[in-house]
Length: 179
Image (cartoon, rainbow, N blue to C red; front, side):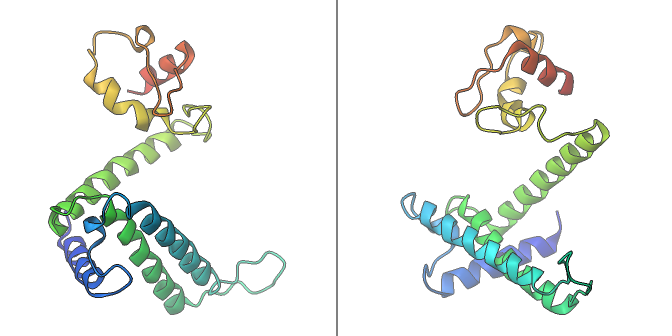
């Protein structure tokens, strides 16, 4: 796990504890405060991404294909700030920057491999997703599938998505072929 990531999270934790409107680390928020905090950070994140794109000549109807690299990167750092707020808010107040960095690193590596596998298997963005909530079955069901008895075929289990949708036998067979 990169040491720099731990340092970034420690710096961010210190900053959040020092500035309004919250004045404490995101992971110290109460359950009641968390939804509003996540919402305004999501809006701020989107706004910073829009500001970054203002530094790029992306419009198909315009002839400029420029990028103001320094300004673009500065806006992405602003966006990263709000993304870190959201990331840190998902932890308890006992989580250290080292722990949060190790979880981020591990989850990124796992998701990176999932994305590689998807591309190699012809990912279409639809197959393997819940028709009700659109969550990825492979990601959502991994915990329940790996904790089940591996000798039992998935088609014999009643697999339920987080949204309470019951997977069909065809969806279970698809999932079985991927794990």
